[in-house]
Amino acid sequence: MTQPQLDTVRHYLRHLHESDTAGLISVFENEGVVHSPFLGTMKARDFFPRLAQASSQSVITLIDLFASVQPVEDTVRVAAYFRYDWTLSDGRLVDFTCVDVFSFRPGSDRIDSMHIVYDTHPLRERVGDKYAPAPAPDAGSC
Image 1 (cartoon, rainbow, N blue to C red):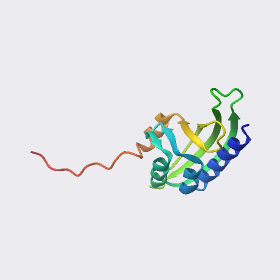
Image 2: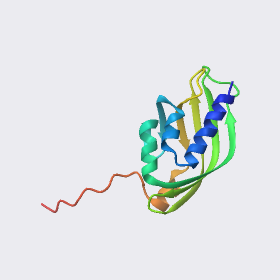
Image 3: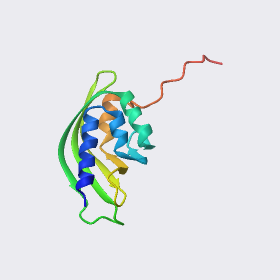
Image 4: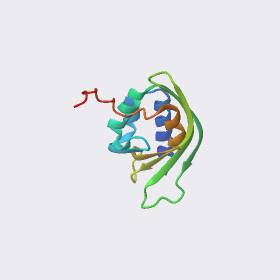
């Protein structure tokens, strides 16, 4: 029951490694969502272009895949544990391990939702908030 979903997660990781935004979006349901520690909950089609804007390269090293053994309400979940060597658009390298948890609707091999799990504190200390909007121009004092 989980082989198609495992294959989808492998495709997702390959697309992430290749910085293939269109490929990443294609493995999600049309209304699929991403739950991100930095950006909150967003539609996948909105999240991945934001990721591409903040990135120049990604190297993904898979450590392990885990699949549901007793799906709740027939929702299959797959977790990918991997090392992410992320080159930001300004050239800085950030490396960390994380777990992405993928949920699939019954009978579907496309991702319905994904929760990204990692410790953001060390990353924020090293690089700041890479998704923060640019500061507003100084309007001067009144």
